[in-house]
Length: 461
Image (cartoon, rainbow, N blue to C red; front, side, top):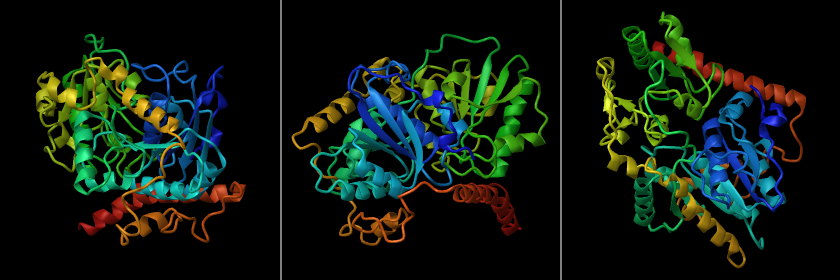
């Protein structure tokens, strides 16, 4: 696996600014969360509103420091470059190493782009690190995309951040209801939108007409369901030889994303004999959407990117409309349809009222979607003495049977302090240790993608 340190410097160079930039640190644990965290940082930094994706000009007032949490899903150099977000520095760290950096370096904002347990651990760790400090950074967290499961669990693990970003009006209402329902402060909930929306609006059919199926690493998870979807996609390509049919993949073999992928599509498709108008594609989703006439998915956030640009979008019903698939979120969207309907030429029309509640901002309001977050951050930074101490809802008193385990996974004690025996934070791992780590990751991925499915199938005999 390529490490962050192997990236070409030119990929992450930001032009120097003549004025003092806003210093933002982003801690992410996967390629998807790095994309969300880095783009969020660019949008919440003080400066003009932005309709398009942040570019070099938009990042002039931002000094971005990237921290990649070491683990099974640490993104590779290729995955980071694909996101297209530049950072002034980028390094791989453990949780303890990140906390040490936050104690030694000065930032205006810290963005926690992690799973809920990681956010909670960092909130307690940071509270300990900044205890007694005259000023501390504003802490921001949120969700990468659609929130369709573990709503209460995920939200309460994120409680304690200064801003908990909600990607839509609907999410903001749900988030506040959960916090208020347990007696927690809900003032941190701040409505924004997905930070990776943007691009030119769809203006009509391309030549050739292009159908894109955007896959997800974890939905559906069974080989049977994935083969069904592949077969239908290939069948659609055969039925419409005048169309270009693309299978948009998230990662290459051996890479991990936010979710574990036991049955990679690019391996399954080798069993088929697709026609010449069928292709596999990687790369930035926005660039793929530039040539898309019909976006098809199960429940990917790619559907929201597509709807933002008014590209005809389909959320498949072939495997049912079920919470486990996440496509239940799109009930009322006007986008639900089956492959049979698509084969027959169906083109969906999204419901405008539904779209407006989802933070898609296809009406042009996206340019101001992050204004409230920027204003709130500015007020917290201007507050005499800076932001108040971090106060998560979960404490050793409110969740004594839950919180210690979450903190211990990141080598932290119940009070947020580093546990004895935690990995050293005084030096970078040597060459031998780096090789061992890469080998361990490779073994883990082999176990997930090869061994585990075999054992599972044997268990079903």
